[in-house]
Image (tube, rainbow, N blue to C red; front, side):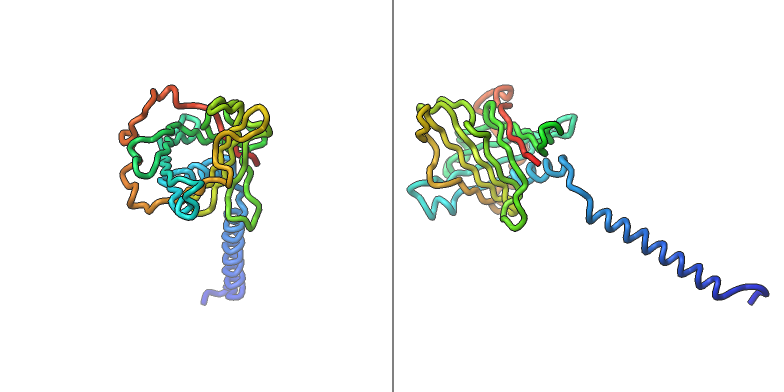
Length: 232
């Protein structure tokens, strides 16, 4: 051993290095674990949860008098320059998936900070649906509804309609749309509760996410309509 060397000093130095590395690693891990969810994170969660092929088969089997077995399909269409996700949506009876009776595009993006919300989804004409993150312990991730009074609608004698949406943790979604006349009578939509759409097996819709697989019954420029909003 060289004259003047201090083995205890080297041991202390090595110990100091190890402690420093542990502290740095712990701080990095803590930062990762405590990282707050951004508005864009919420947008991605909502877009991912809405995507895929889903059916109301189980609900229709339980209560065939009030619910149909509908099939809905939502898939990525494009991404805007600001990062907003555009999804293609269609709804049809399960026996005739090639004949959708409802088609639209949804745009999922964070809404302006002054609106105090996380995500804005484009959907029904001139419609805004406010979603809040579900309370801890509930099955859902997000839930919400249109503002009081809903939005204008003239189908089947209605003057306005309301819409509710719940996004669950297993990619299941619940939707409930109802139309009302001037006197507050419900004139369309199921009365018993929301439709429950559960994901189909992945194998049943592989290859369907190409926009070329979706024949649109109306020009594209007529399909960008309305909005949903996810509120903080």
